[in-house]
Image (cartoon, rainbow, N blue to C red):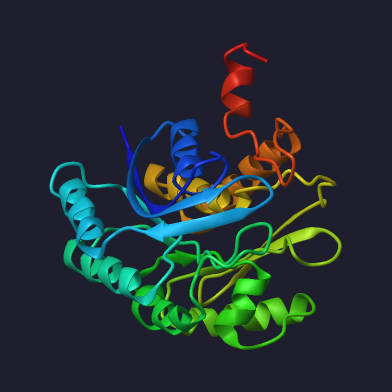
Length: 266
């Protein structure tokens, strides 16, 4: 059985973070594992607070996983501060996993900050060069590049700038753009575009977490990056379209829709 590890924050409402990643790994037939970096008190309409896990506990979690069940892919989500980033980067350099996917979680769906502004430079210098893929949305790409992204051409330019920071590939997600949602993948040589009609829904809690963990799952299975992104795009679109419509705010997606349908439970 293929394995995947999520290094991220915990979402007590179950739609994002560690919980979303585990559901996504399971939906793809992988054995999922976790390193919790922060405990977040949140629901579908607010983030009340979060508490970071001690750096030494983060490092011990990573060591215990890699010495026993080395993952075929590592997805990195919420790293709220410089100290957490440095500890994760140190362990990635020690254990040298393949297929490291970084979702640079800076904001919750309702706009609440989940990364300290001062930590963005550490993300760029210490973690981005260790990634085979990084998956910022447009606001996150703007923070990373310092440029304003207003159109398709700006997304292409931002992808080049982020790739130059040292990652093997970058996907800039188009969910915050106008019109169709077009995700752009740049691998340093070629651009790939993944368009889809915009889905008219508010139930998009944890879509970034889910998309990046779906990519990680497909990389762990053995798909090349462009195919992994294409398959993940189809997965997240189905999860959004078939969202269970839970919560008072931006509700979660349906991570197991395809599995339940095949099993005759829908």
